[in-house]
Length: 274
Ligand SMILES: C[S@@+](CC[C@H](N)C(=O)[O-])C[C@H]1O[C@@H](n2cnc3c(N)ncnc32)[C@H](O)[C@@H]1O
Image: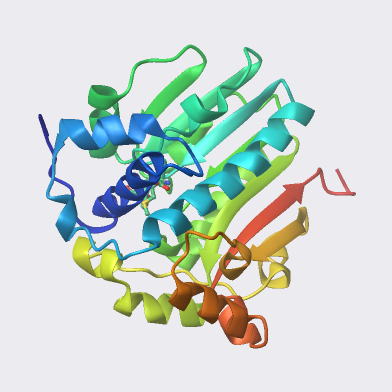
């Protein structure tokens, strides 16, 4: 068994890992992430304390599948590209997606998390793990910016401070010729409500950055364009508990609820002025 000592935002990778592991054991699994299940068996953590509620495993698997599908679409259109999987935690996305030989994939998270990944998951050609804060400019400077980039950031941006998050986005825009960001985000109200979120509480993590619309994200830089956005309440599945599905129905009427948690897909191209 591998000992795990993670605190704060780093510990929030445990409920998402556990959610994918539980989903993989369901007869109608959404993600089939059996590597997540194997990882859960190998680490010494009392998963009953990580704050997962009934139905969270389904919601977590649906969120991951949405970002996987968007990532696969980008890779199909850009067989030669760079992928920055930011705040990767113990997510096995690179194994699920199985990118082709033209893809240079980077998993980025704090050093403790990357060390743990190394103990749990095998090396993979074309995939490099980087132990650093995503807000540190140094690691990106080391990556060649000659190809289009796909940035995948699942459950990350809320843990960054707004200025750090925006600086990170601009650094990526300056480093690569073109690309896409796929990520989830909380609205400002959503960040306030996270104080009630059991998984965030269990990890003793703090959320900071919330944004309310595509327009607000596009205002970070004129090169950014929102391709699509989707409320987490639109991810429907029979396995979601009735309470969640009722809330999802109500959210269709109230914008303030709809945008509590949203998936975004944003393109960037070189600016018209070059
Ligand atoms: C909710 S977990 C999500 C992990 C993974 N994306 C998933 O879906 O399972 C948040 C992750 O973001 C990472 N994280 C938060 N702030 C970070 C930062 N400044 N630099 C690197 N990683 C960060 C945490 O260590 C953690 O792995």
